[in-house]
Length: 91
Image (cartoon, rainbow, N blue to C red; front, side):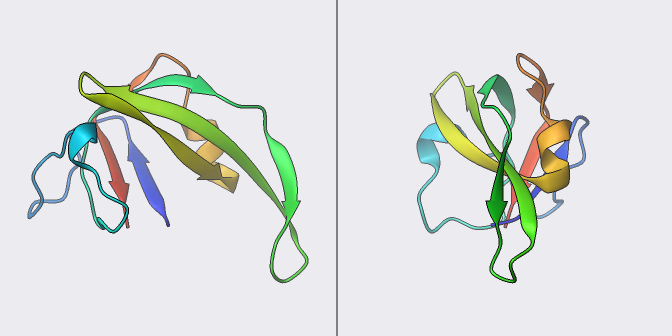
């Protein structure tokens, strides 16, 4: 899964905003507005090609619920606890 994290109104023109309670495991290309509740410590993992990658988990949610969002590499630094993100586009 790749995630594009935006702090503005940049959302896909063809997609409506989806509340957390409406997310399903097979949903793709989702636009949603969430607040970051917490973020785990960054840890290093070995990738498939034996490269070291950074990963952390963020708990994000809206008024309908929360989900755990895995953050890889550069996306880790784009999420700050208690900040609101106008769009998380997951594919």
